[in-house]
Length: 401
Image (tube, rainbow, N blue to C red; front, side):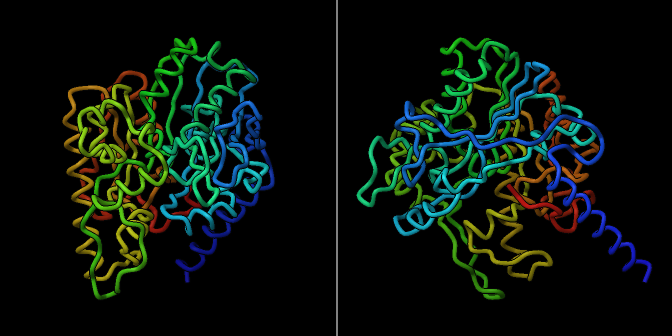
C-alpha cells in the first residue's frame, strides 16, 4: 500500500508540474525568464527554403532581453521520409508544412530551458529552434520540386533561418558563443552541416566561439536488423548500405553531405550521413549526447518492436546494437586526441538526458558546460551498455523531441 501511495503521489506531482508548464510561459518555480515563443515564418526572399508542401520554413526564437552573448541554435527532430508515399503523407502534417506547425512553443527542457533551477548552466542564453518540415535530415538541396510536387530543401531552411536571425536580431554582432546542434534527425543534420555552418557564419562576420552539440544523432551504418521470432520484427525504415544511396538521391542531398568526409569517401559519399564515417573529419568541436540503447532508433530503423522488459530475442539484438554503438563512439570520440565531448549513457532513451540521469555523478548539462569551458569531458557509461545505469528513470517521464 505504501508503494502504491508513493507512486500515486509521484504521478500527481508530475501531472501538476506538466500542467503548470503548459499553462504558463514562465517556469512554475525556480526563476528564469519567459519561456514562451511564437512561430516565425521565413519571408519570400528565401524562395528556396521551403517545407515539403511548399510553405516557407519556420523557426522559434527566445531572445534574452538582457543581451546575453550565448546563442543556442537547435534543429528539431522528427525522423525522415524516404519515398513518395511517406513524404506525401508527411507533407500534410506539421513535419511537412510550416502552416501546420505549432503556433507557440515553450523553451523549457534541456539545454534550451529558461528555468534557472533546472538549467543553471545555460538558462540566460538566447534560444532558437528551427522547425523540421523537410523530411530529409536537413540535407535536401533541391532547387525544384520532384515529379510529385514535393520539395526537399532542409539545408536551405537552416541557412535561411541563420540569415533571418541576423537580419532581425543582429545576433552575430553580439554573439560571443554559438552552440549549434540538434536532436534526433536534427542531430544527424546538424553534424553533417556543422563545418559548413561554422564557415558560413564566419563569412557573415562572426567572431564567436562555435561549438556543436548533438543529442540522439550519433549513428552507424546498420545492415543487421532484428530477426527475432519472439516477438516478430515490426515495420522499419532501413538504415544501412543498400538504403542510404537511394535516400541521398531522392532528397538531392549530395551537396548537404560534409565535404571533408566526401573527399575521403569519393566512391561512397552517402556514408557521410552517419557520424561513424563523418565524425573523424569534422573540424568543429562537437559534444555528443547519446543513448547506448536508443528507444526510438531501435524500432524505427531495425524493426526491434519491444520495450523493457525485453524478451530474450530482443535482449540479444539490443545487446548487439549497443555494442556497435559503444564501439563506434570509442573509435571516433574517445580515441580522438582532443576536441570532442561525450555523454553516452546506458539508458532506454532517445533525446532526453535530464531527469536526474548521471554518469560518474555528472549530469548532461554539467558535462556540456564543463567541456565548453575547456575541460576534457568524455563520459562513456562505465556500467556497461545494457540499461544498467541506476540513475535512469524506469520509463521516460516526458515526450521525446
